Image (cartoon, rainbow, N blue to C red; front, side, top):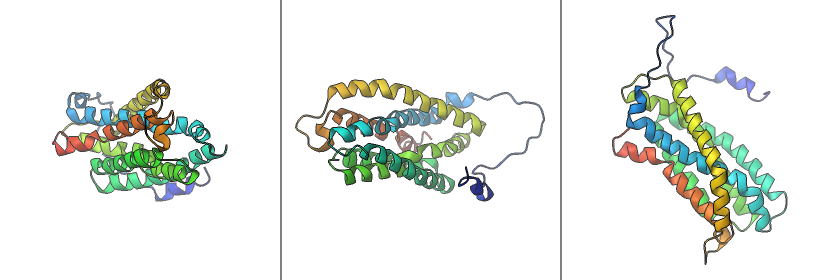
Length: 230
């Protein structure tokens, strides 16, 4: 609280505030739910959310299995949390300056690289720490894109409250968090990738592959932008 409070003095709104012309409550316009942009963004958010929780859930036990010291797992989670602060700042800066799909592209690219390369090939503490830092700087700040998602949906020609879109993004992230646990437990039973080295050869190999694939689908909004669906 002591560190965050001074930042209020330099905060500025990302979206323009439209003064209300009437004191009465306006009906909620849900027409945006019949358009492609909302569902494309929601699908990407769900897929990214499924993957988001998996490293945090399994890193401590993964570190123990590959023979790292007992503190390696908790330290990795601490580094991830610190790096995620930078992730939120960088993603927010991108959303302020460019279309939200640009920010999503960089978050997706960094996340996929961190999982497939750095987590997948981890055999030592330095590689594990590099993974969580890159993961935190990219995937850790994905939720900072939500205000940009609201702006993109508004630009598609519908009137919708920013708070409503952010709330629905929170719901879809919650869905991802609920299903990620049971899915990852089944993937853990599947074991590693036969004939592979590094972390892919451990019992967490299937989880690593699944995480990377989900993160790749988390960037589906970029494809929608190229296809002019957004």
